[in-house]
Amino acid sequence: MLEPYLNKGRIEAGCDEAGRGCLAGPVFAAAVILPKKYLSPYLNDSKQLSSKQRLELKCEIEELSVAYAIGISFSDEIDRINILNASILAMHRAIETLSRKPEFLLVDGNRFKPFPKIPHKCIVKGDAKYMSIAAASILAKTYRDDYMTIISKDFPAYRWEKNKGYPTAEHREAIKKYGITPFHRRSFKLIETQLAIPFI
Image (cartoon, rainbow, N blue to C red):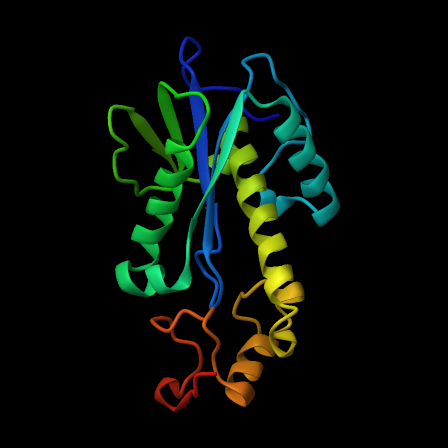
C-alpha cells in the first residue's frame, strides 16, 4: 500500500500530469487533496492500472477527496514554452483552482517551479509512493484519455481513441499519410522527414 502522506499535520495536495510524451493533444495535470484517513489497497500509479480500474478509482477519488482540480496546457502553448514548462504550468493551474488551499505540495518527478506561498517536494516516481500523487495521476490520465477520445471523432484517421496521441507506429503512419492537425505538437519530432509534413 502507498504512503498516505509525507507531513502528517499538513494539508497536502498530490500533483501529477499526463501526456508529456504524446505527439498530439494537451498535457493534463491534476491536484488532489485526500482525507487523512483515506486508505486504498488498489490506489497506484495510473500506468500500473487497467482502464477499468482507473475509471473506478476516478469515481472514488472525486467522491471522497477533500478537493481536486484539473489543469490543461494545449498544444500551441506546449510548442511555445516547451513541454516541461507546459506540464508545470498545467499543474499550477490545477493547484490554483483547488477549492481548498493546500499547505504542502507533493509533486511527481524531479522538476517543478515553486507555487506562490506553498512549499513543495519533488518525488521521483511519486505516483508509486504516495496516495495523493497516485490519485492525481489517475485523474490526469482519465481526463486526458476522455478528451482524446472526444477529439478523435473529428480526426478518426489518427486513432486517438486508441493511442491517445502517443507515438505509436500507427499514429506516425497516419501523420505521414494525412499530415498534421491543429492538435499536433509541431515542436515535436513527429516523423523522420519533419519538414515535409502537410498541415490540415
